Length: 115
Length: 115
Image 1 (cartoon, chains in turn purple, red):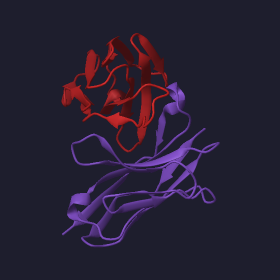
Image 2 (spheres, chains in turn green, purple):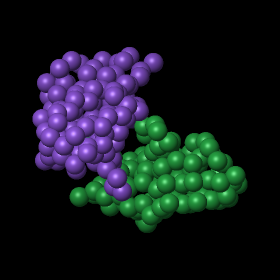
Image 3 (cartoon, helix red, strand yellow):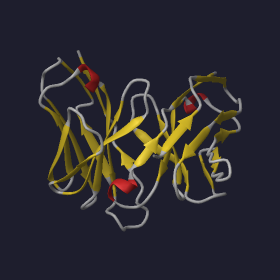
């Protein structure tokens, strides 16, 4: 079945440091890939997505490129801020209807950015 | 614009007590609705999804049930809670199957602690 593997956290960085959170996936076909962010005490928000190979999703300074050859979708940001402290989830989706639409999530990576 | 509400925000219940969590969506019609659970140290797991009133599909066998009595209302229930039911419960919606831009949008979540 489908699965998503994220790097284990927690990740602690200083402000303005470079961030990489690794994500690899296992799925048949051509899934869409997502990064969601969960700020403290809140639900999930879609951060960025990519729907086909070599697509790059970007938002709020974060980027991730859909690499089919390595089945990866690593999240990067050049200079993190304290406000980026949150839990980040990588996810994939196959299909477009009913249960086939369901998102398969990784376990999440807690990022803490210190001033 | 569309909004999704969940309540209560937090809940502490004894083992063996009943449960009812509510999710409502505003600003859209005939949404697909989803219940996810985020257990401690684990990723998000899809519990139930619904494509219409009275239509519920269960993804995993468990102690919980779901109902959709109205188009934009999705309820998660249990007759007798277990310790293992503790977690963060997220409701999500998306536009109906076949419509464009059909990403999932998440509610703020309910944190359930079973003692």
